[in-house]
Image (cartoon, rainbow, N blue to C red; front, side, top):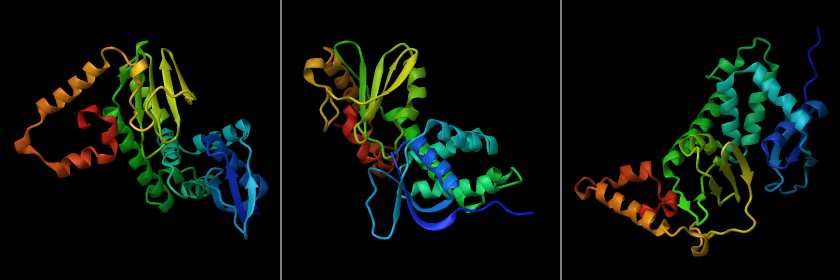
Length: 265
């Protein structure tokens, strides 16, 4: 019995558009071309090297879906969510970490590899996904909406990971009848919700301060300043100076998130 041919060792660098579908297309083409990558990198981060062969991948929805179906078939819902969270981490080299996991997943003939959390690649996915999940949970409590004059709620955020779309289900449940936008300033994209639809958006005309995230005065609701004052008053009222624990506060509420919280300004 002959084994399936393995991707040849090479100096191939796969360059893609940075999207999840683009990454899955890369995986499809790696197996099609049988050229093992030394690097998988988004177009925004790629820097040409002398001793590499760049392979520019065009995102293909059909190829992407075939790879995703393969992952779903060989694992379960927990693993597929973990896989996406790891991609959303945007950590350096995360694409090669995911590729290493998929090599083992697709090569497994027992159908049980995805259950082995002691495997190095499985544990690394678990570790990274925990970090991303933790940030999602934090932002469930850290998002502060501002009301515009036309009744839209707007919030600016700047998370470490690409989680803005992953926040949508929570806030759609919490503010089901209220149109809102959560906008990731670092990645210049956001999500817009108006029942029952959620859309990913990019704002070309930014009606908010691009440094502080505050909506501009001419589009601000008349009551918005009052709401912000109430936030500060509430924070002051529940604060007990005698029980101040700065170390604990910084662990639960890192300083890098403060600039979007009215109670900390």
